[in-house]
Amino acid sequence: MVKKSYTHKDIRELGEIEHVQLNCGMYIGETSNPVHLVEEALDNALDESLAGYAKIIAVNVNTKTNICCVMDNGRGVPIENDVPIKISTKLFTGAKFQDNKTAYSVCAGKNGIGLITILALSDFYIIEIYRDKKHAKFTFENAKLKQKTIEDFKGDPPFSTKIQFKPSKKVFESLVPDIERIRKRLLIASVEIPDTTFVLNVDDKKEVIKLSKDEFFKKYCLNESDDETTDILDISSADNIEKFEVTFCYSVNGTISPRIISSVNLLPVDNGGTHVNCFYDLLKDFLVSKGKKLNMKFQPNDTLTGLRVYFSLNLEKPEYSSQSKDKLINRKNQLEKLSSKLKVEIEKYFNEKPEELNDLLLFFEDYRKKLNSKNIKSNTSGKRASTKFTKLRDCTGSHGELFIVEGDSAGGGYIACRNTRLHAILPLKGKIPSIANKDDILKNKEINEIIQSLGTGIGPNFNIETLKYNKIICNVDPDADGGHIFCLMTIALAELVPEIIKKGKYYLSIVPLYAINAGKKFIPLWTTEEVTKARQAGETLTRCKGLGELNPWQLKICCLDEKTRRLVKVEYTKDLKKIMELFSDVTKKRELLKMDI
Image 1 (cartoon, rainbow, N blue to C red):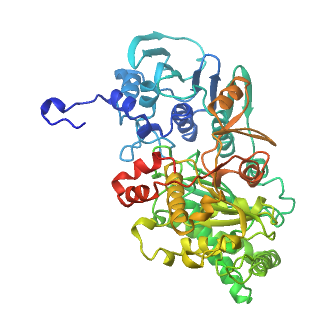
Image 2 (cartoon, rainbow, N blue to C red; image 1 turned 180 degrees about the vertical axis):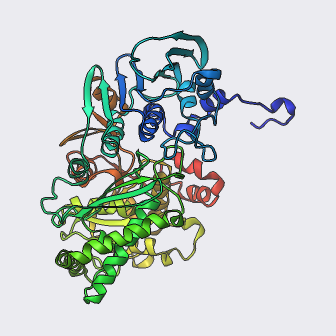
Image 3 (cartoon, rainbow, N blue to C red; image 1 turned 120 degrees about the horizontal axis):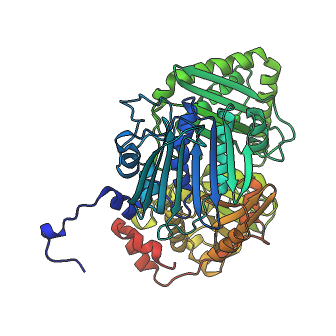
């Protein structure tokens, strides 16, 4: 019910801490576990290391008491004028803003909200400092200052800044942070800042993390199946304090989908962004140009086949898609100077090694020939589908499974790990249009490809007997966008080819919540009970955010292997007309997502 009255009494002014507590997703993204709080404290320590001061950084996690701690031996937070209190309680307070870089040039944290989120979302928070022969300690409980002490100190300090906190169970589903995420942060930092020692201490099990760039690349950028690769090329470009480094090679016998790891100012930027696209464009332009001169035939995207690459970018003014900083969104022209220098390095390397370049171009051409040889003329007679639908990778068997997947990234993973006899893969590009609002729906390329791939025809020409697959499986990420795509797909099939759903041929593939992930061990966890049990057993867990982030062999376990995957059969509903009415009204889409279709 909406209140009829609206007066000045309805206006509420929130304090800064209260605003963080009521809108925690806005400040830290997800709240499944408090890893983002650890990262906020870690960012500050890493910035001290980047600036050349901190030589030791340690992260301590106690999974029994749920207390987390980050410490470094840098310069220490200034104690004067209650600075530790200000940076812990006042939003947009710090030494990293772009118009006042007196303390930091390139840094991971720049928004002035990091420590405030830790304070606001923890039961207790302690900031402890050794600086200028003083020892200061500020203790907060439930975001309120409880104790402040500043004492003289003689001798060598054990550290400079220490942030200790216990996340609030009112906010987080689990109070144990994602240890693998923290380890990844420290691994990347150890590669980029080799003169700093990084320590991860979980339940008193100390791990000194240190890898060279070559070791890191071979261990984390190459797949187990990458037995044969081109030479690993390490190129870089610099512009004053900014630097763009790329380490890459090609796997000629491993999975075809690219495998990338990307960092910006020591932050793992999992979803790539501008810098990745800039490099891809440079590589495509150069290799396609060389291929044309030699009359070789392949597509620009073929030059990414088997690519393995690690990106490291130091940028003065990075811009991210969200507070979780998982995608760089700077405009391309902001990286133009760095990119132009990388272009010169790429051209110089390959021009000096014409035989290696020629072998690579032949590899792309051979890949394109293999794809083209698999293309078969389109029809609706139950035979294999057409090359006219370039994204469909059909199966050789007559009664396999069609996986309709979200995006080329996930599609590449499925193609790499599938059984070609059983599994047909059709990637979708973005969201298909709503059939409720579009009369000429079959003019849409994505919808047309889906219907043509099924082989049944539609309307008076529909024939369930010519359906080419035993199962039609929708695979989408476990987020709002994925749910939206699933709804659009389901409505389209229910309206155009309803018998496929009525005959029990249409399924949704469930993505696990987490997975036990340690080396070659990968076990999907589907329920909160399974996740809790694994955590109690001390297992190393990874959150399954999206299909595109899974390695092909992991994807096979989660979605293809009948012994380990989980499918939900979609039941046909008698309320299809009501659902379509809801879906035609954009203001009611949230209602649709809650319905059991």
